[in-house]
Amino acid sequence: MSDVNLSEINSLARQLVHDLVPYASARSSMSGGAIWLNANENALAPAYQLDGTFNRYPSCQPKAVINAYADYAGVAAEQVLVSRGADEGIELLIRSFCEPKQDSITLCPPTYGMYAISAESNQTAVNKVLLLNSESLDLPGIFATNPKLVFICSPNNPTGDVIAQQQIIAVLEHFNGRALVVVDEAYIEFAPEASVVPLLSRYPHLVVLRTLSKAFGLAGLRCGFTLGSVDVINALKKMIAPYPIAEPVAQIAAMALSAAGIAQMQQSVATINQLRSNFIAVAQHLPGVSRVWPSNANYVLLQVTDAAECVSALIKEDILIRNQSSQLGLSQVVRVSIGNPDEMQRLITAMQNYFLNDKRVSA
Ligand SMILES: *Cc1c(COP(=O)(O)O)cnc(C)c1O
Image (cartoon, rainbow, N blue to C red; front, side):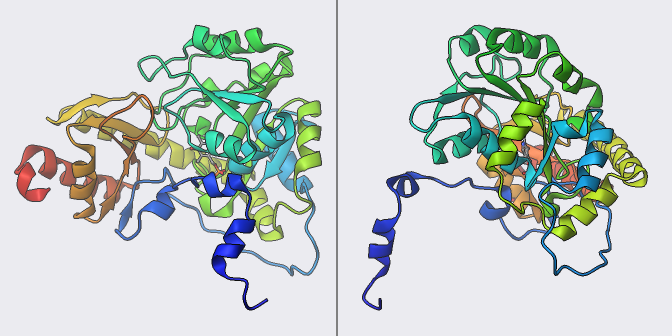
């Protein structure tokens, strides 16, 4: 036992694990700073109290949470799966529908990084079909792939805008009976009219991902939802762990999905949408900002002269934003999450100092 050294342990791990580059989350890759505008969290967070004892195992799919989310989303309870964040929903979809070393998924960069990472850890190939002008789907490019799952993120992270519903319908029509079309609506509360949930009744191969991490201000809770036809949900239920949702998580999620919780979320969405419009109006007039993507979410993507320098200049002001320049199809871009009014004022002042005043000195 004692002579088993670390390198021998490492050699026991699968080749896949040696090769895997884990997801660099905003939280793991940057620390410090007082103002966190790098992870698309919601600074207008409600506070919750717990009560009760926790000696019993929780329900796998707590009814109060499932029923409340079904009501909120306008679907039947059998069409809802609750999981440890939308991230677990992504992983379950890939593990349930993609045969390792055989099937593939299609995604449209620049987009959320976890689709590709979950695919890789399930030995599933990834077809990357870039967004056109980092805005719209390249339909012929997508139709040239032969995947089991197509991931479409709308509003898209990190670009911020919604994908036109006609394009999503075209993808659904093309892949009817051949692949699932997964629409990631992690930010849909910021543009609720763009939701494709009403299409679920027409397309049994449509799947929608949702989360409490963004508009609901509960990223620390780790609670997300997959919406789809009963057959899709039942397949995922076979693969999910027996107790994926801790009892305290279920209790808080049920409170967040009460009428009062939803009203509070909608209030914070209205505030954030207003703060975002104000920020975009300022950013559009800063020299050195060459493009501001339209946003229907709680973040804004900006093209700047030197993204790394811009991020460093703001770190010196105690403000964290995210460099997204390594994304396929983007260069020299930073993503700014919308914080509370005070944080946005400090951000705007810091950006004005950096872009308008003595840029070299402050950087
Ligand atoms: C944040 C995010 C997720 C993950 O949500 P969790 O519920 O926190 O796991 C999924 N998709 C997109 C596009 C996101 O930005």
